[in-house]
Figure 1: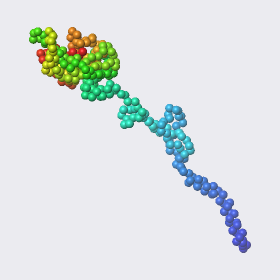
Figure 2: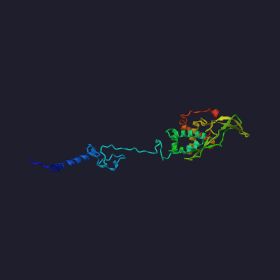
Figure 3: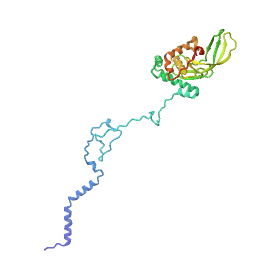
Figure 4: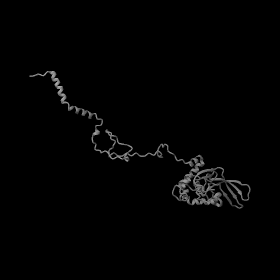
Length: 305
């Protein structure tokens, strides 16, 4: 038989392998490309349609992840993410930053007064509670000022440390005595918001009793007597009920709801006090124990002005 030299046979084998491998080589390259794909699952159909109709109103604060192909459309069944609004000035916030805090300038002034300011604050808060509630007393004040609670909140306070401190007792020729307690408070008539109520430092707003000064109608020197209990209407001095009544009475003058009663001329101040009690007694006495004194012990009572 004819024998092909080994060198020629080797060349033939190489040529045949080159021709037969032309179809297999691209498949091998294709396989390698798929194997190197970083997101092979991105090409599979997950059965979720993508939204094609997007409007500005459908943009949410948090978006779905972008696909491998660069598409930003999120699936239609992706639930919208709602981000609650945060109010930095919410009082429930632990540390509000840059929020203006409402100041109660009147309360700051009362705090600076010390113990007298504490007593005024106690009565002021009680009156505000009454005026902000639905009752006969607040309705009476609202007839004159629909925003009476807001108006009352603006009122300022001063203490008269040079005011009367004694109960004047005038003795007649007979066994009759006339008593005039030190004034309790005063304010300008019809002064409105931001008016100043002046409280006598020696009066029944701050004290339960005062020294008497006895004089005679015929004249002559007056002499100091013993202490005498002082009150506001039916309430003992230096009590919450008395202090609340004082502020309500003076507020009536601020709104011109009560007539002028300076120096208790013709008993006008006591008449005005009775008018306040007609509408406000229940509120004044609520949560406060009422203290009263007999007419023989107390005389005719104390005027506020």
